[in-house]
Image (cartoon, rainbow, N blue to C red; front, side, top):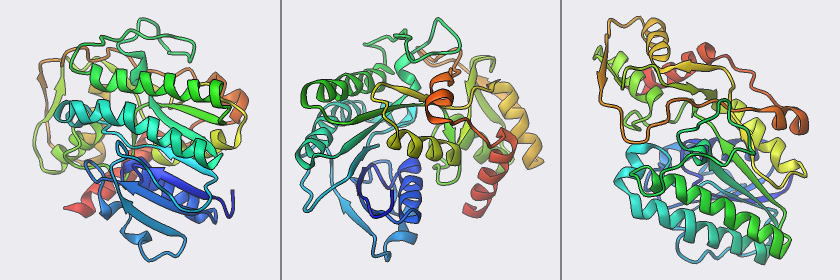
Amino acid sequence: MKNKRILITGGAGFIGSHLCDRFIENGCKVICMDNLLTGSKNNIKHLLKNKKFSFEKHDVTKYITIKGKLDYVVHFASPASPKDYLEYPIKTLKVGSLGTHNALGIAKNKKCKFLLASTSEVYGDPLVNPQKETYWGNVNPIGPRGVYDEAKRFSEALTLAYYRTHKIDTKIVRIFNTYGPRMRPNDGRAIPEFIDQALAGKDITAFGNGSQTRSFGYIDDLVEGLVRLMKSDLNTPVNIGNPNEMSINDLAKMIIKLIGSKSKITYRELPVDDPKVRRPDITLAQSKLNWEPKVHVEEGLRKTIEYFRELK
């Protein structure tokens, strides 16, 4: 991918900023576009003086204009944690619809490839486990989480409509729970929340009884999977995640142990429509991308904890 020119929407976010790093390392030119609603310039400050990198503060729900050629549009703009999309429900719906439409529009105009960041949340509270790409999901379209779930489901439909109608080379990744450095301490998701609480010696707050499961994948593994997907000939959705499922209780205990904290686990009421299970079937990624996660959750948590320690 050397010498490619890439537009990354949401490039100052957690995952987007790591993609900026990877593409710069690969010799690409990167245009990072972000309105900084949930992203942060701190995530990309080390790149601001790099001649191959440029930052544009822009809301992608407004028309996107880029001068010159583009080889890829990588669309990551969107609130991604329940805390964020519950605070910004209309903006979440707009970036998934209008934002995706504008991002696809610039890809069509530039005759370049397009990658959509979708999510395992399109599966909702699944009735099958693990979840294959062929599973249609179990989503409450009018529940509080529906603003994110349906925005991503719509964005997938729109992306494939552009693929079928305008013959754009589109890629869709369904991202499962990803963690690592540059997550916000007040993100609201389990890993940054638990680490922040344990480092402060506070009790860890889990939802429900903590028996619900998630599959946690480290950021480096995700980025590798995304790069391989971009180089592939796949146009339909692909799960990228870690199939090693664990309960929220086990996650909390592991974080307490790694930090050496005396925190106890306390419980709050389970949010509406919170998924009981979450585990990707990665057969497609294994067979077509020769990809599978390499970083064990304990190793990834150690690196993430170290990042959070440095923030203190």
